[in-house]
Image 1 (tube, rainbow, N blue to C red):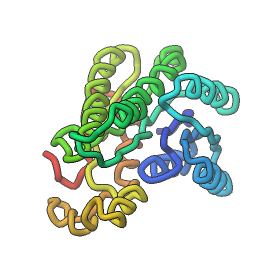
Image 2 (image 1 turned 90 degrees about the vertical axis):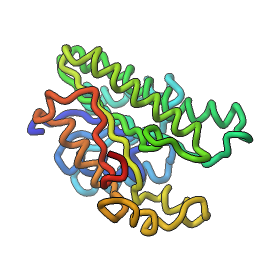
Image 3 (image 1 turned 180 degrees about the horizontal axis):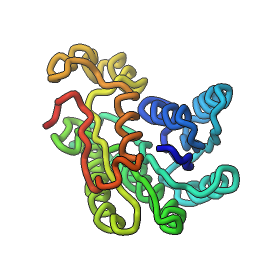
Length: 249
């Protein structure tokens, strides 16, 4: 990507989202980070600015359309029209299906699926006006294989995959590509917290069952995003790009 375009990354202050924010910022793109974690948001945005990046930080709950719209107004005012959206924000809280409450189900859907809807739809006017846009959603292997005690998470991410394919069909002729990356095992603070709490085995143990026997990194996902948002990927849309070490084929 030679032209510098405004990039929005949701959930961009930690884990996979932070890896994506850092890479696009390092490539010289103005980056707007949206996240609910206020402390991490300000800390990471300040760190990127100290390195010379153009970054804006916005505390946003992506399930709330009014908050998304307000943040996008600030992004446009400070950075310019939005050209690239990486819809990454999500939650995953292990809960057995038989005891799952409707509130637990709804909150997961609201953030993981409805949040992607808000994040994308609110940016579309800029992309349509420009005749150019790149959208990458971060889904999950859980949507492909299922996930014990995470039925709400798998269902929400399956919805993200279906939404991605549909938008790829709807906007492919208007200069906008829409693709999804469904990661599997990725070494993030969230994954390590699950390891420490005993919710999941050590990541290195899980990794031994993957053809490429290591956990993925946020950079692995970020590099794929970088390619999908480039001119080199202009003929790729509606696709699942499985960056997972071969854990799902």
